[in-house]
Length: 255
Image 1: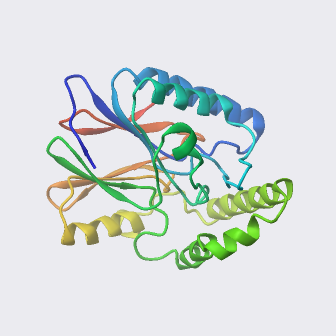
Image 2: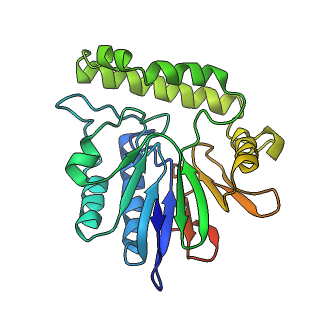
């Protein structure tokens, strides 16, 4: 994908909104904050990339989608009608996006990292789940969750049952990760996404590697001329990335 920025235009990146958790009221407050952020950036945005886990759970049945998020979806729809390109990526919590957003809102959905060139700078962007060494249990689970036969079987559960089960699974997974300290920085040599970037840089040069998933805002050099950025999350931190044609910056949205 290639984007040429006009004067005063920027590219914006955010990830891990986790709408729907941990409660309806806190999710609604976060949703309103996300909308305020979108309203802030939309006039400058040449494109907006939302890099996965936008919802704490999302599954598209043939004729049903999860209840809620109307304010967020309405704002995204408005931006698309005004000509702002918006791109979604699936994360480990919303792997089951299919064609709803593409058909209804004209929003492309990517299931894997993509390369992006903006002016003269090259990006590799994605959610980040299952990349790099380690996390072998999740890699096995992801193969199961993305298997079409398994998805076909799951959709025969009534939405009230399927969504409730998946929401409980998501909550338990998040609690387990917190107990294991996986939301803490333990040095760059323990960061699987950073190690993935190092390996990719040996094969092909990118100026910027931009991912989510990690729930930590990170900025780490990759070799002598590249940077790895992690966007963090919006449950408590509210960071986003912006590229102005010359450099990339992580910003905390006070909102």
